[in-house]
Amino acid sequence: MLLLFIAACLGHLVLMVASHNWFYGLPLPHWMTDAIHLLHGLLVLAFPPLLWWNLSSLFDFGTFGGGALSAYVILCWTAALVLLPINIAFRVLRPKPRALGKVQSEIVNIVKQLGGPPAGVGKKRLEPLLPWNEAWQVEYVERTLHMPRLPAAWEGLTILHLSDLHLCGTPDRAWFRAVMDRCAAWEPDLIAVTGDLADGLDYIRWVAPVLGRLRCKTAAFAILGNHDEWYAPDKVRRRLRRIGMHVLGNSWEQLDVRGEPLVVIGQESPWFPPAPDLSACPAGPFRLCLSHTPDNIRWAQRAGVDLMLSGHVHGGQIRLPVIGSILVPSRYGRRYDCGVFDEAPTLLHVSRGLGGDHPVRFLCRPEATRLILRRPLD
Image 1 (spheres, rainbow, N blue to C red):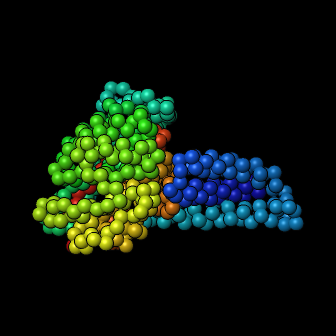
Image 2: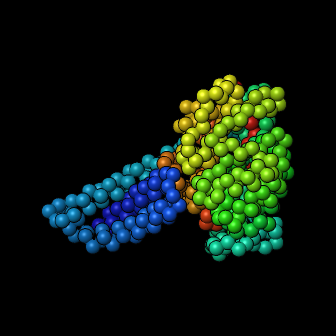
């Protein structure tokens, strides 16, 4: 009986996490997302004592509510004993995308680099002190992507992909300066920033001095995310333009890169509707799309996007061995939590991001990524 109780509680947790992820992936107001957090937390805590108190009459379908509770417990057992193992097996056995080539990374402890913890003045400056928290470490990743429609002239073209800075006072600006200077040393051809830049009106003024340290050879592009929508998005856009970034919004631009046309698309929905109108967009050139959330992947497939860059989900921030991510704010749950995903004709890259509303990370370091585009191997 105890094992069945534990399995039911685990299944309940699985169902609550799935529900939380789905609802949190919707374009809801800030207060409503906070309410979703609270409601799911209360439901997670309320179920075990409710089940324990009703174990003796669990399958007495004649009692008031007995049938409903019994049916839900069966659903919980199914989630724990069938759905969760299948999901874990799918993730562990998922083949490496064919387009993903060589991957190199270096982990840098910014605390050692700066000579002290960059706690800053944020309201959550004590959270990074939690044991095993990796929030101060940054993984600088270089991923080679073999793109089928890449023009020969673009062999070796590089894109710096940054996402989810969540400027909120913690970490402080010294931490971000160190990260941006390292990214600038990569000297990428293009820069792509995929939203959630500032968490609070006081920190919008950080956007220009932080991102203004970056350098690129051709052009820098940016879009906004859901947190930017909460805090004066027009001010964020003005500061990005001030440092020379192309702020796409829900639109597209065509530019010449090494003598070949490139179409860069901004996709800020669902928080800034409507989706981009591509009716006048030329169909032939390579299409690069910046979308804050990976949930727009089906739209990108229909739009013939070659490469889509996203963030938003932070890799889950807290990951467990084997199981992986848990809380992932997406309608697809954990499916596109971080890394590279081949969803032909679109290749999707999801960054774990640099910051977060909560500076807490376990087995999920902040990430800055240099993408190297190459022609297919065969």
